[in-house]
Length: 136
Image 1 (cartoon, rainbow, N blue to C red):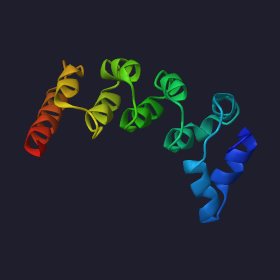
Image 2: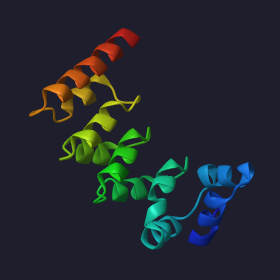
Image 3: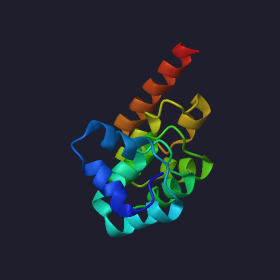
Image 4: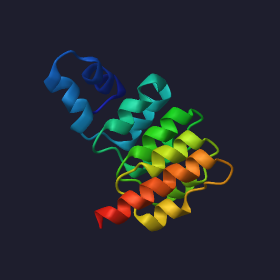
């Protein structure tokens, strides 16, 4: 288990594959993740990549002011309904597109993503829906 923000940064920054893999797979407490986000904001993306990151942390990052961070959350397979609703109506089209590309989303969820105002985006979501229908 990762016990401090500093440990996570050390693991993530390591050149040893076994150490940076730990940063991707080891659990940490909500408090540790919050400390990483607060003290080392440039590592938010790596927090999201961790396989065990709690939904509570993803919900927080889904509200981040940086649209690239919100897009990273949108790609995460384990998003919940709260995160989906936030990102499906995101002001940034790239965040909504990242959500539309989330392989776990069902067709009904794809159809709920805000599409108005962008012909390109409407076409992209239509293509994703067609692909899902073919996969059935």
